[in-house]
Image (cartoon, rainbow, N blue to C red):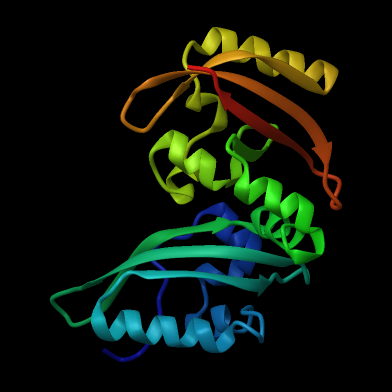
Length: 220
């Protein structure tokens, strides 16, 4: 009711982004707002205002600048809850989507052939870190899985396939040789098993991060 913002919990990742002061600040609103990228400031402010007013889900992708001057893309999702004293409690998660946004930047009209391959391919295409965190999935991947790209990104890429022993062997081959091609079993959202041919390769992005591409062809 007073308009004050007070953190009840912040994990180590949030502290890395906003600094230790995020958990001790008496002016949390300004502590957060000062990190919001100037081009996203108005969107962020309006989204917060709407969420507080309507008690609606806060769901926004925006840029921040850390205490160290590093720029990140954040996907912030939080649910507001009005408490008996009139205060509003936000509980949610912030996800670093910097790599995903970097890929989206590449998939523009400047890279029309690659953009068309990704968007129009009949085969599922998934881009992920070598640890298995999914960064992007094309429309064919959504159709094969039977869900949205956001749902696919919540899954570690190895868990999209049946028989984890065989999947581990495939990952070992890819990590050792830089590529893999073979037949696996894809698991859709509703649990259906789809026999597929998978081609995977490692590559390095402009930041020096090692990433992996998955091309998945239905052979049923």
